[in-house]
Length: 117
Image (cartoon, rainbow, N blue to C red):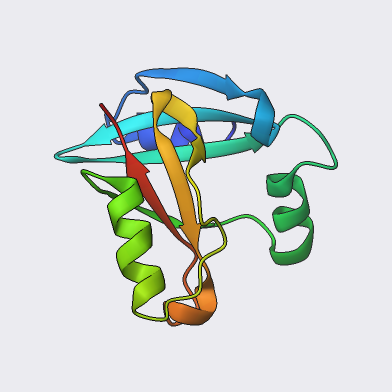
């Protein structure tokens, strides 16, 4: 991934690259304190990341928040009238279960909820 050179120049090393075939993407993880930066690279021209980059250009695509219980978080958000992209979790990188909240409910930011065991 071309953009990984920037983080490596700052001394932040990737913990590895994983391919998520369901989402047609390769993910590279860069730990930063208690957080991590995930760089995404599309593996297919019809994948969601390729479509996003074609429409918006390169840059930040979304922010992820770690939750302890993704099902409970989705139920609570839906009960409060928050618009969800995913009402049920799906598989994400790093073995996480993920779901996305619609940008319409977050001030224009695509938000990922991520549960890792």
